[in-house]
Length: 323
Ligand code: UDP
Ligand code: MG
Image (tube, rainbow, N blue to C red; front, side):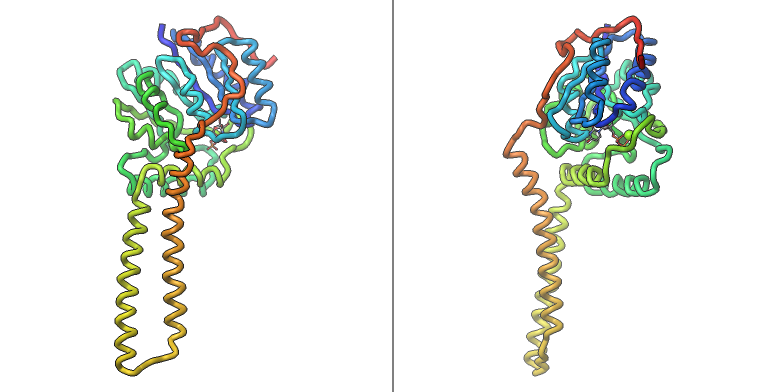
């Protein structure tokens, strides 16, 4: 029997975990697969860890992995994929915004021979205008800048065949944008659209800061275009300053020597601004190189519960939740 691993990053999701586990059970129990549900606790500070422990005590197919601190959603997913033992690995959020009801469709496409089944979020109920608009233009910008295509609305709800998952797990960069990485993987890929419902409970754990970090990772990790823009902009400014220099010489020869305070100020402001900007772009890349050469582990697993050897995912007969 084939085994399916479901990987779920968890950060302060105490109000969702039991409901989510039940929903997964309801879907998986109808199919003839063995399965494991790997919750990667990303340093939760609420009651999530205790609930995961309770779930694991009851069901051996629930496997919590506790990270030593909050490493971020993308790293948590990576940790889960590293530990997943299934023939196919599904990653999804634990707040019901990635509907478990879509899992059979993903598995169906996998059985038809697709190695990667990517879901595309068509719309999200109750999401702010700000998030919708920034997301739309971000994907346009990203695709214009980088060589690999990332689908607008692409989410981290996807299925990976064992071989594709192993390939993805070999990408060990620290600033991760998994959607972009999957785009570069190749294999045969299929897409499924879905409408994301509102969160079952709790609030979004993705602050504007975390969102901006992910957006930067997407651009800087997959494109050297910003460096190229810096080069062209720098060249343009150098050309402009040459013209300005010629103008100053001509004025000098004509005897129109003015105090020139304005010109100097404009030049100083313009060029120091451009230089700082270019240094900033370089700095972003240098910072990333710095992180990579340190080669620190992506995450530390504090505690592992459950059996992670291949073929040990077990299907259980019944489930009782929410006592
Ligand atoms: N998450 C995580 N670490 C974080 C932030 C979020 O593991 O630092 C998890 C979170 O528990 C959820 C998933 O990532 O299962 C998606 O987060 P969220 O629903 O807050 O994002 P949104 O749907 O608002 O984009
Ligand atoms: Mg969510």
